[in-house]
Amino acid sequence: MEEKLFWIGILMGVHLFLSHHFKEKGRFGADSGFSRAWHAVFAALISFVGMVLLTVSLDNRRGDVVTSVLFSGRQLMYGAFAAAAGAAYAYWKSAAKKTAVKDGLNQAIKGDMEWSETVFSAVLLASVVMYLFVQAFKIPSGSMERTFLIGDHLFVNKFIYGFRIPYTQKKILRFRKVERGDIVVFQFPSRDPREFQCGGSQYGKDFIKRVIGMPGDKLEVRDGRIFVNGAQVKDESYAQYLDAGRYPAAAGKVSPADYQAFWENRMLGKMFSEYIRDNFGPVTVPAGHYLVMGDNRDRSCDSRYWGPVPEGLIKGSAWFTYWPPSRMGFPE
Image 1 (spheres, rainbow, N blue to C red):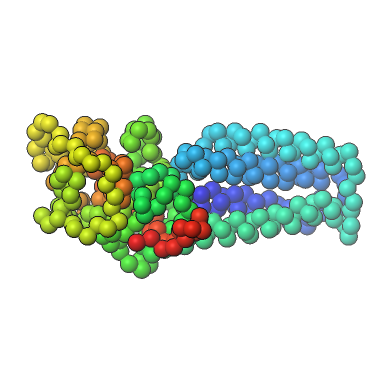
Image 2 (image 1 turned 135 degrees about the horizontal axis):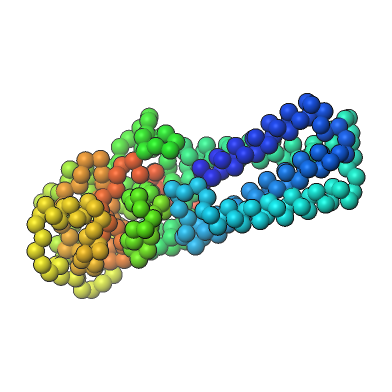
């Protein structure tokens, strides 16, 4: 969302810059055809921005947001229709009613410039805050119950693991490293929109899970119990198991090297389905990667199925639940 706001802010900034340029050239000193056309351009921009943000918001609510794509074709199409309608209406209205000119400036253009400056400043500031510091996130599924419920709204601390350089996976000024037990928000590790995982294409979507395996860890799940480097993880008060029975281990023999390769290439879930839910591994977490799992272990599509998460795709740590009020607080 922050990238979308940033480019919307840049778009409004370009309009503001050109408006000041035309003002200095004396193009807005009368109720002319040029003034009406430029007023229509502003109306088109505002209509486009409003419609795009509305469709993005609706897509977010449905869980269809793809963070790796700036705007979808559908969002741009709706925005273009809104822009054409807004421009036509603004031009017709300004042509039907003469606009006042005061102190040598067309008053409709003056109002447009004030709004353009306000939107430019506010949106650009919001995008910077969201990109570098704090971002709102909505829980889309029940994979983290009881820690988070479907529909919970929380703030994500985006600077704790370092400030990400735009359009790269590099980070600078790290406050601390990712630790075992952290609840992290990350972009799903897939570069192919055609790849199906967890019942559909997860390409570019944001997930939230808990870090269970660190780089270099040897991790295994036996009958639902987690073992890290040969020792059972016993303190998992946050974990929830809903099913009374456990799935048996997958039938068939796979060499440890092949199993590791299948896991790193996100193939295990496709090969063994639910049989790896309760009996998984052993696998070794690659350097620079993390193994993540949902707290609702029997209802979570996580690293057991689709592999490790590269550190560069981790956006931040779950910080504070702010909605609903009854669930406000810091996650454990």
